[in-house]
Each structure stands twice: as structure tokens, then as C-alpha cells.
Image (cartoon, rainbow, N blue to C red; front, side, top):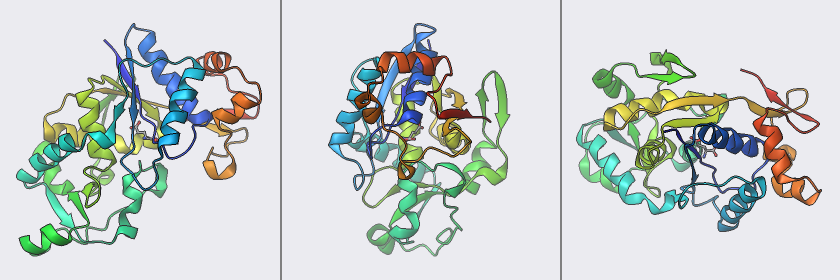
Length: 281
Ligand code: GLU
């Protein structure tokens, strides 16, 4: 059975790009009588707001998208993330990082696109000082080289094809930080596994996350889902949708008289409202 999920971060109102992503995942599950799950990725407590969780729920209902079971709320799942991190630490695959919060703030949100920070390895291999480590570490990073030495280069299946990553795709990603039990990649693989997700559907801007998530799945002995990365909604002419350049929220579309069910049906057929288009591979 196909199990997909929509995993928005409640840091703002959903826009057309989110609607396309939700419809994409929902229709892949519905086509086979599968399950569609909702996950609230609210680990970035500085930016997540309860009213945006309510907004997500209202917007999905407006689109006519029903999810199975209760939404999974990441901020309530710290114990499971800590357990996974503990196993990786026990295997000697994690090291503490003392770099400042500013350097690493970006890592709590999903790394969208080429702007994602590349960590230069500053704290890898620092002299061991357990006292200092426990007290002062800002974050915990995966030692990607050690991890790859254990598993080899991970591969994944997308659209019936098998892909194998190359070494260049790996960074010493942050797994957890002082004020959060997990960062995006670790929480994502732990939750996809706990919810029984079999098909990860998400935008192409998250394609670069897939190799490291497959690596973490291998290291933690988690099942391997299949992947589908979909095209992104852009303004006609190719400009990317972004909150800062007034991507229309679903709330605004609803306010201007757009019908949610009709919009969802068009998006499922790959048709975008006037002024928008799908940006290709
Ligand atoms: N929370 C992520 C986002 O807002 C999605 C993560 C995922 O689908 O893996 O884009």
C-alpha cells in the first residue's frame, strides 16, 4: 500500500506551491487506495506558530484533502529523536560542533535549494574533551565520511529508476542542537519510518536532501521508502514563488472567491491558475 505524507512547517500561511505539493502527495496515495498523512514540522520553535498550524488544517480542508489519522506533531517526538541520535553517537558517527548559532540557524529549516549552507568541517576531529563537549556544544553533526565508510554510497528509487549518490553530495549535516532534539534530516527519517511512509513526495528543491536521508536510514536500519520529487510552482516566466515576493496564500485565494475543490482538481491535473506555471526539471 502506498503511504504518502505532506509535511509543512507552520512558519507562515500555505501558498500555491504547498497546495500543489499536498495535492500531489494526496493523489498518489488516493490513486491506489493508500493513505495520506499530515505531519507538522514545528521543530523550529522560534518561527513556528500555533495559528499557522490551524491555518494549515483550514487550508487543507478547503482544498478537500483529508488525511488519515491524527497529524504527527514533531515537537512532541523528542524522545524518539533522542533515541536515534543516541544510537548514532554510540556508533561513533556523531561529533559535537561549537560553531555559533548564526552559522547553523539555517539548518533547522529544510535546506531548500543551492542556498543551503555547506559546513566546512571546523569541529570535526577536535581533541576529545568530554566535559567541554557536553556543556558547550551548540549542535551535533553527522561525520559523513565515517558514515559512508560503513554503508557505502546510498541509492534510492525514484519513478522506477535507481539513483546512486556521489560523494560530493554529503555534508556533515546537523542532526540535533542544544535547543532542539533533532534537525530536519534526522526528524524526517525517524518520522517517515514511524508513520510507515512508503513514498516520499516533495518538491525538487528538497531533492538534495534525499542522499543524506537515505544514508541515515541505512545507519539506523530504517526501511527504505521510494521517492518522487515534483516540479515547483513558479510565477509565469519562471520566477520562484516565495513568501517575500507575495506568493498568494491560499487564505487570500479563498478570500477572492476561488473554490478550493476546483483548485485541487486543477492542480491534480497539473493545471495552474493564470499567472503561474510548473517549473520543469
Ligand atoms: N517541512 C518541509 C517543507 O516545509 C518539507 C519536508 C519534506 O517533505 O521532507 O518544505
